[in-house]
Length: 493
Image (cartoon, rainbow, N blue to C red; front, side, top):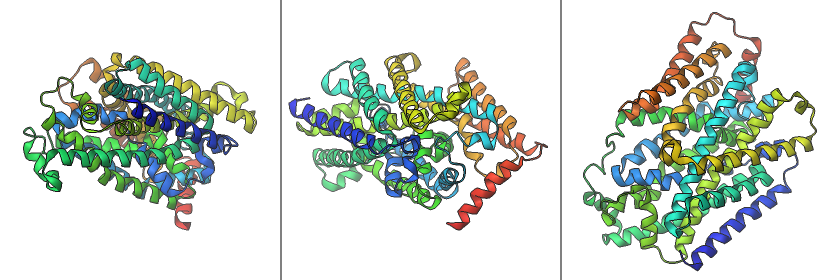
């Protein structure tokens, strides 16, 4: 990286901190800090939901998969996310916003106290918080790898730099700072992604036809929809996992729906995010698919995207691309920090310290900022030790994807009246069964990636549905009222 690249990166960081400062004066209480007061426009919510699903991992772990296995990455990642989010737009997303209207929730796990009971809520809140520490740490480690490729700085320095910038602006600005950073990073990503796309087309010397002819020049299998171990079974597993993740099982994505003004607006936001997932990754991932043409037999494929940027982009544009990668990662880490902070301060700490329930608005806002700060510091420490958990891919795929299902099943299905017989006891059985399956597969490894990733969520789903079906306990009136009110509001919109 040259001086101009560092200037571009510095300007981007300055923009982030400015957004955080602007948001600081807009945040008056914890509702503003966590849910933007329920005033998030649908288009901003949709863009934020979309870009919050990216991180530097896309340009490290996923770039490595694009190099070794090709187009299958789009099929099992972007396409399944787009399809999952479109389904969620009609069945799940509106209910999150209506929960805020009906029950006044500020965190995704807050409604679980009504839907199930306190033990279930606490189990999901604690387990989910611990899982997000690993997931967010993996994303910080990913962007540090890219900074190391571009500038030669150490991995530890990159983690601390990204973590501290994220820590400052999200702690002072809350959700408003987060979503406006998402919008800014979406613009930067468009510029950087289109620039890389055009540059690679020019280097291929085939003009616009290079979009099609490139695939004949790639290794065998790289143009296939499915390329072992990323089989059709794996894609179906990821479709299920992504449905529960992008419909709100990943808490920061639920917050995007919760913060809209109505169920109708949440639906529009999810549809926008879905359409972006179907289309934009085709351009964004194209340079990654083309990398084997320019760099053969790379020892470490995860460095492929960084090498392409350094090879083909002029000074200044390298800084722009790096800024977009920082933006991707900061978008996810900041939104994670904001949402997990809501769970900690709204659902966990008041149970441990009941006096918090009597706090004033100013005290609750101060608590929100303290928990955000503390969570971000923990993710930085995890990122610094990512090697112990299988590196970036291990943290994000093997740990987060596999562990997400058991806690997402009761959260998402609990919103639907069809599963009203699955009570708190059933939810706990479902969660514990999924987590034990994950542990068993770590103790006794198996060769199939599909089984490793999919078994915990499959076991949780079956336990939740089957135990609920045979549950003879009467459905509590508060649960019936919850579903009835969500349905009534839905009809009035």
